[in-house]
Image 1 (tube, rainbow, N blue to C red):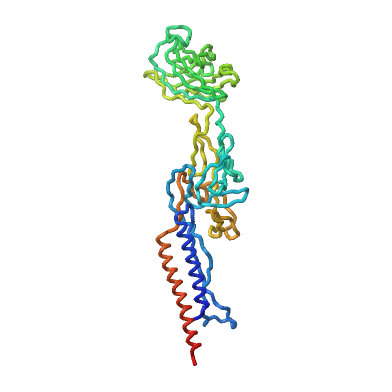
Image 2 (tube, rainbow, N blue to C red):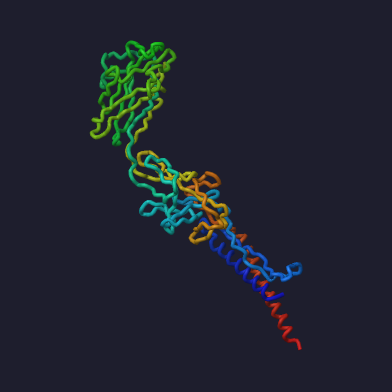
Length: 429
């Protein structure tokens, strides 16, 4: 027995106590990963090449191995908090210097970038103006606060039932102010290129006679309805004027025309509204889709009215989905993709170099970062409004603390015993 073994044991127990103490100190640190001290034995080199009778000369610290097991995910009160459920790291940037973290506590800085407490910027794929995610080189993610541009109505779907028991209106000429000149009407709101809203009113009048268009000479329409359209009270002319178009139904109550011509499908009517309705706006070209309209022996009813236009809107909030896509919601009820968070994984995460502040950096031991969107490959998913707790098992660490203390005391005892033996030898006469 020598002093060397005892001294190396004291050093090893001290290193183990340091690792355990660090784990306990970070038991409540978001995204922290526990570490374990790993040791190896030490032997002196044998001159004759045989080590059969060698006695070890102690121990040495082999490595401090980080344990990247999943921590518990807990809900938070901040919608900007995010947790990774599965493998991967957030990719952070500071003036182009890249680091990686499991700490998903983020906030918006004054420029609209998603940053952590140290000001490092979260990176990902930025979205185009139309909301398409551009999967290129990851860049710091910024939440744009500009208004969402308006979109003019281009299509509208009208689903009705026209009563087959209706009679021809008594008034011969259509007049939107004369209810005896039409059978039924319904209204909806549409938008022009500047985002101004307009009220579109559709009128339906049973025709006194049925004339099958030449394109449908082989089709028998038992009933024809004239369709009229006004925008903010102004009539929109069509063919045959002043009707915008005609809806024809067969004896089964299903639509047989308008026919499908060019880009128009069965039951679709094209309407062009002059831009003079709103000075400076483009003419409003709408395709009215009546294909879901029927003629049955039931009262007039509106089953569906929808259109694809909207006015300008301000950003009112945003949320992050499991795939890392950040979607903004606007005051006009629309939503738009603002960007997508990327995650990075490594062939050997234990080879990452710890930088403090819950950050790791790439090293030759870890291998190059494998960057991709969440929920792809081996990467985990994003859980918004939550954080990943430390994976430290406090109970296990306290038990390890007792064990390390016993190891320290035992190695100190070997030094004490060696000292007593040498003192005995010195005292021999």
